[in-house]
Image (tube, rainbow, N blue to C red; front, top):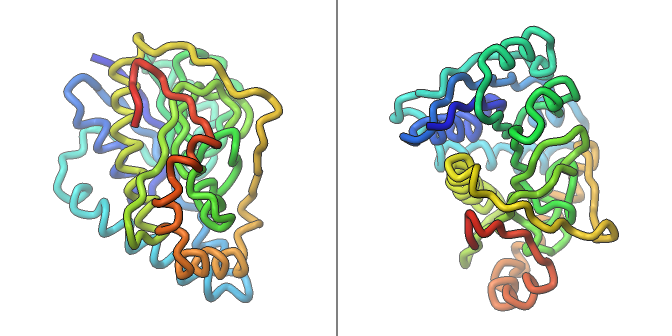
Length: 273
């Protein structure tokens, strides 16, 4: 039985994640520290001018989350022991002291604020994070959004890593790519990936002692870095133009060739996606 603490957010996808992990019989979620939605993307965009396309996209994303996760969240017993925090409070001394007092086998992060050194140092080697994106190719914010804007679906995926003080720069444990189907739209791709991510994260937790130390990417690997401020009306326009012009259908035909040019790390303890 693995005793874990989860650090996460409060969106529906985060609630789905912690409840899904907590229902695993080999995992005990001692506590889930859930940061609030202050400074979330919809609230930031709402205050900006010229925001019509971004608001439409974010509204569609919220509806898709309800479609994918709503029923599960409503009907599955919550064994994740949630504790509500303000955004950024995960690095408070009070929170750090509480987590250290609990003494979990593993500390698991998904969707929380950037964690700082005191907590990282306290759980070095047993602190895991998932980055929704394929590092080091795409780092920062919106790392499964920008590959679709740039016409590169092969870089949509999830990266499981040991956390460090950088942004998506920890030692990679395992990676998965997103699955695409004919007629896909951006919000569906992301939420389907979150479900698969949760399944793989569960397997990584249960099989933690069997994980292999993996050879990392070379330092010169091409990478793109985006921040929240890069999310623009033009990018949303380009995203949906790409889909209208058949990005998904073209990718499905070219998938093997494209993926061969964008290698990922697959831990033998977990296996290929």
